[in-house]
Length: 177
Image 1 (tube, rainbow, N blue to C red):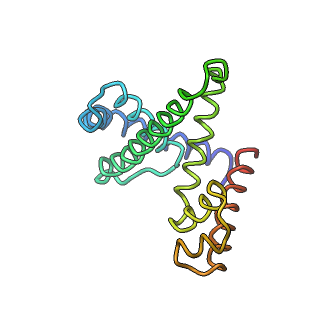
Image 2 (image 1 turned 90 degrees about the vertical axis):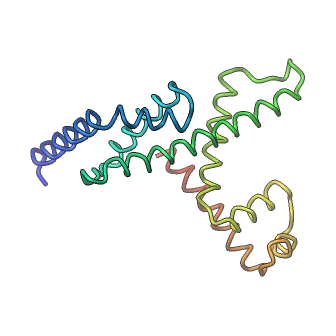
């Protein structure tokens, strides 16, 4: 595809997104407000829904627009609640520290972002791979102990942990690229 054709395709896609936004944004915001009980979060997630759609480069069929938008928005709601749980747990842990050891607001924000990214990586793994990696890294269990707890072979544990470490490695290198 030539640069001109690509530019025309981009323009057409952006026009389609604009039309979708004009037609469904009010509905989406209202739908999110009912689900969240909060107009501010609803407005933010409606905006993020269109950003996600824009970055995907995929335009839904016209008769599937609302279903597609609500699927994206539901994923963002899950992300929002997951992030809030992580943030609350982190702040709860910080509350146990002496005041002089408390990190700065900037450091807190960076740690929360890192924790959210780690959570996303872990939730991208199969449940047994996630559990094996956590048992190994956080609990310090041996592969044999993990195998007994998960009721699998040691070679399965090796594969699970390798899968988890590869996912972490890829995420790290994707971030640095």
